Image (cartoon, rainbow, N blue to C red; front, side, top):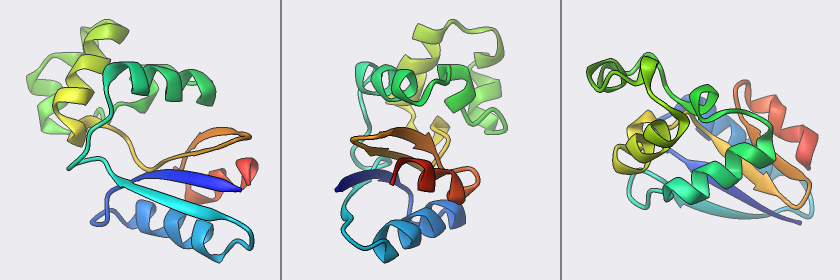
Length: 114
């Protein structure tokens, strides 16, 4: 099974999710360091739809930039555009397999799609 993780190596939750993936037999891991290679708004919309969450639920609301940009009152499209332009706003990690997408908060959530 292939698993893609949108990963931030500086984030402990992202590192924990990656460790789960790498220790699961039969899982081929693709790492995307999303701060260097941000997803497009369409990519994010697809991932969140597969995860069953809204873009707002995938937003790092506590980031100062989210407050600066006024994203609390923004539409889903505005949030997705802001995340693609400022990937630090993306809650991480996101993991995708053929069984679905999960936000790894807590990291154990990703076991549901392995």
